[in-house]
Image 1 (cartoon, rainbow, N blue to C red):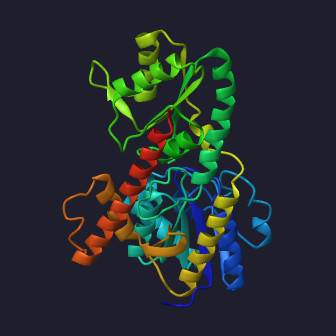
Image 2: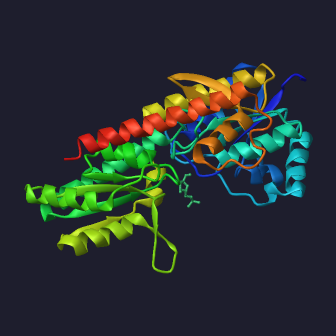
Image 3: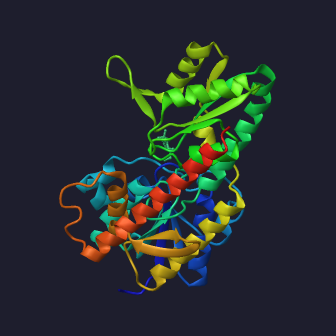
Length: 362
Ligand code: F6P
């Protein structure tokens, strides 16, 4: 690969606290390596529309402590068309961008792969509050999001205790229940419902009744936004709302539904997120300076490592049961076994946390 003189960094998809620490780390490490850094404004859209800024060391001062992403983010429909993709590549060529660091989730990495196969070396950094990228133990933003949920629930607890009320809280996470599960344990929820594990509604209702009969006034029920049930017309309805009504109608208890929604995505990043983002950003630049491409930076058993992006995306689909025909064809038996091992690790993690949540619920 030709010498790397100039790189671009972008954030794409949903923002996550800690993305700024990753951007800063990429720019500063690039500087240390004698590589010029530019920032792409608004994710892949900034590449399509050539919206770039210079990222000197000074330009990334005072962002490590800020939530959101200083480079902004966007969903870009043009980028998924061949014409938009070509415009993005032309932007890279015109601006002599030798490689890209893309911070985000699975959608971001699909975009990164599209660039890499068209000759623009790209490295992904995992940033999303959902912690839903199967190939990594951790995604930047997860810790802050959980702590934000915790803070909100602690406040709710005060008032639901005063009123002998049950608060049913729906938290973000898309199809992944990790935020709900971890924050549910840490906030002392009486029940936690996540998409990954089948639940028994009657048992939840009886548990709540047993707690109330035992003198418990306020209660917290945590539900992941990825849990839906069908209404009478066959439409998906968020389960947290349905459960709230069921608790009311089953026993006449005072129950209120709470949806913090995007509040959970904002806020000052925690130490965990700033540190992990910094390590990942630095590692991304090390990989680029070694001439590597089409990798995603992950955390594995506490170590910052990297994996082939297509391998990581396929492992993700394998775990989520969304593999398409032919997805596994390009992988060896050993690689498929490695994907299965990653998926097993995630399942074991969820099963262990779920068991703990139930052990201490009442
Ligand atoms: O992926 C991050 C996330 O916040 C999910 O938890 C949530 O489902 C989704 O993004 C919301 O997306 P939007 O910002 O487009 O409403």
